[in-house]
Length: 607
Image (cartoon, rainbow, N blue to C red):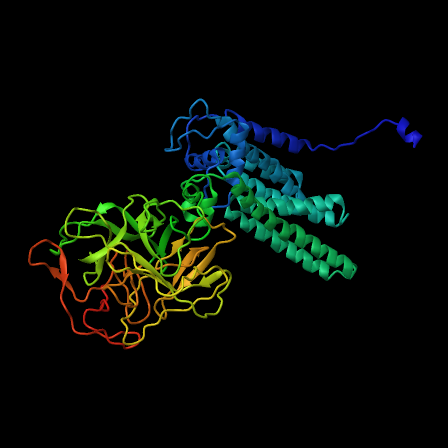
């Protein structure tokens, strides 16, 4: 021991001067005047936006590939002190003085420079001569397309680098297999192969081809190991487990980790969060989080919700309103109420928000403690942006003239009173429990009688069903009028992502609604007449198929309401409003029950 301490420490290293020379030439060709041109070139306008999102921590999701490549580019901007305040609006725009162009282009340039000596090593590991390897590396060095891509803020250069690294690592692992299996050197190259494959796929999905190539070669080599009689069964099993861990488990784990880091970095609402779930949007700073702040987990008076029709064709759509009003006179000469339009909109929008209001109170905020909406309660729906109440009246709908118009009420000081009270009806029965956390809860919301007093619900006040409850269905039986329905979804964004549930409403025997959130679903409709209980009718849209038990939406340009007792016609006074003409009794297409005169008729299919 003492003798070894008296001896000097000697380190012996072998340096391949070819690799050193190729690395130097690669760095020189890629880093020389890297800031030129000092303007946005080609796809820098595309990737630069994502770098700014990372710098400002604004959520985005690029549908062209995974986020690892964007994070690498953002790392260069972070190291260079980029604040993300540059407008990436056009190719050729001059970079301002505060944009670190050299730092933003540094990592792609380094990846392109290191690809040159890596090509030399790959050819050498394949047992070719050094002259052949040198020739291959020189081709990579002087290739004009590779040089150009390496000097710009693009993802092609890092993708090529990790593809070459994956191939080189596996070749070194395979060559070390012959001499020292399970040694630290052997484990290093095997694990590096899996890491490089994960990085290649994490930059662009095209990297999966290199990953499949490596997996195919590894499978062939593993098959040869199984047939090697010089190895024991335990040794063969250890070889297979090592390859599974390094080439399957490690890449999958890293690939998922890229998304985990991506989501952890981006915590603010942005333009791309509309494609995510409502619960996820509510978890971001700003955006929907400002709406759901302080909202209870159950639907209560004052809750802000959205209503979604899941049977909309071609896409589900949300109950929507905006400042525009229905025209006074339609193109076919029919009149309208000139009230605020209510439509079905297939995209998430701030105009999709509605507030559940207690008709007996003027406040729109949730009380403390919250008062949940229960079976039989009479409510009003207030449009969040315009603060107008959801309303319906005996005026023909714009696209379905046999149905009543649904609008947001505008007081024009004329003889058209507001009819904006809606009563919730909940039917509880037995149904099989659906998959996961979806709970079927059949409910409907009918318009309360248009009297001055708010009617009281008959029977006990049953609370809305919670997740885990079971629901029943409303049935059409003679001689009751058939339940006319169009289905919407009520979304509570205050629910946490891991607690959100999906609910189904069954109004017609084979039609259903889904309610997203921790609250039972609600469908909204009208009950014409006063003083007697009739099955509530709900919204009907253009294109709904009645009698077959199925509902479909042909378009979202207009929203209709109840079917009146007859087709609308112009009033003799020329006011432009519609009146109804009695029709012969109709029969229910579901159960065959007849309809008495004056009861709501089954609307005809309008598309």
